[in-house]
Length: 171
Image 1: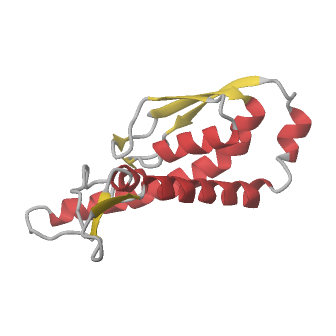
Image 2: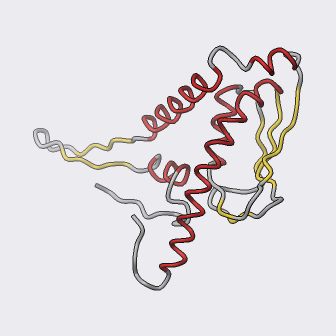
């Protein structure tokens, strides 16, 4: 197998892993013909991410976000911001973009902070604009995923800082 080095060891999960594996090609030898071929797993990874998002929407929304559907007119446009509420390492920005695009391809996401960056209370990670119902439908899935991913990234960063200079690797 061909191994890719981690681009940023502070975020060993979520989207950092996605960026690495989507470009990784695995070399294998065909014993019978003697030809080499490469398998690109990026398409399969995209399918798996879409399946995770689809399952999350099915579980979270069921047959619809009844509050948004009953209170917000169908064509209402809105803007929302992801406001950071604590110090740590942010993760899941790229995943959030996929979630918003999954629910509504016309949604626009403007990012100000990238995955793996240090953040503090009050930072704004991104603005999202588009159909208000679509934004609200995706909101809980985005927040739940990003909170979990950022917690893992923050804890990983903490342990990596503790191990600096020891030649120890976190697997």
